[in-house]
Length: 292
Image 1 (cartoon, rainbow, N blue to C red):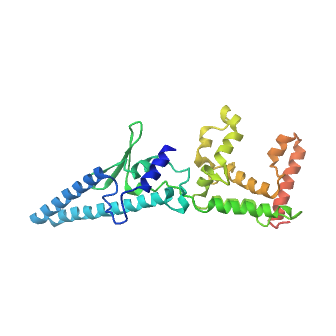
Image 2 (image 1 turned 90 degrees about the horizontal axis):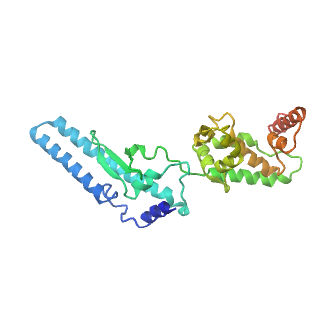
Image 3 (image 1 turned 135 degrees about the vertical axis):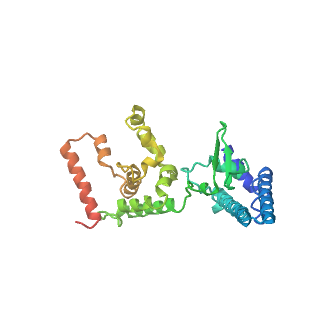
């Protein structure tokens, strides 16, 4: 991706160091805007001190300090972005595909503008290719960031444990798959990561679209059921995300594992046989939980 290479090249050759001022790291044009605005506030402060209006002077002094704090926070965010995008952890991009980084990438490589609103606070803007301008405050930048942690490693360890126990004939897994997956998906942003990113080399969203192509094309599965947020276990009555990853663990333990739906599609059976199969699945689950 050309955009990705441009960002990484910028941070590899960034002409700023840790000792650079917070106002210097967003390009010359923005530096001039910042310095001029602060100079105007200093002038207003001095003018009010001379006239004896301490309250007005205090307001301008507070604004100057707030701008300095905002700029320091913005510098820290830029450094965090650089690390997450590939500056650390072996050069891997730790941002989940769930995160829309179009605005962030442009602003962080000096393709954005800094201005000030009527409250004398920073306004950060980036123009989209179609000309639309998206503006954010400093505190807005990271609110939708989703950064990957140990989620994939935790799942792969679970899958490996299930595969190791495959040859223990007649013995159930030593952990409850559904409970473990439920706990994993509800930890922080894990559900967003498991929806959007490759986990163990497989992508849930791609797999879901591929398996349900006919239903999607016919409108049986509407667009709103394809939005990443619709797969979160807290809002999805069908538990699609949970079932996908739970079934991957179950298949790691039993290569012949099939859901009731898969078995029915493979060999048409009567309602009585389907009911018996579902009862058997429930019995096995109860055994694993120690209820039988």
